[in-house]
Length: 224
Image (cartoon, rainbow, N blue to C red):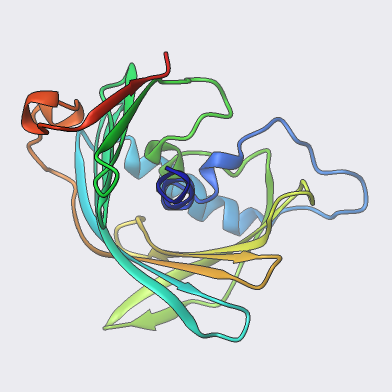
């Protein structure tokens, strides 16, 4: 289950999982107001969506730039509900309960959703996760495949975190985060890219619950 939790930890951000009440200490500088405008627009746009379905790619590189692994996945969100699937692993959440399913181990762990400020949910990636935990600056716009992206670089206030920088590419037209790069202190880099996104998806509520009848032979470990 360690790999499952590690990947999920990064997918949903990767940065959203490091929520706290940290405040920037004196001498660290201030965030760029223009960068905040971009991030605020991302949060406001996300709140207008009733349901989202997206596919993404994850590439892991070491300090020398050598690719250590490539994975693909999907994420679905509806209100507080979500479902994340990534190469042999799935996480379901119906807004109350979380099921972490490891396909190769034929095991699913069941836990209660923690709605506290430090909890991990995909929704937090698109909301105001940045206000208290990061300093952020706006970089130069970049163009990829005919589209223009705003680039925002975030630096964690808490220097004990395992990463020292996160870079977001925000679609200038849609105000959606389309790529994320996480730079860890050990040299590893986690590169995410959204391949497709549907912001008007029709997703039924049962999509977000693990149904044991559909997974015969899977061991259920209830940690609640």
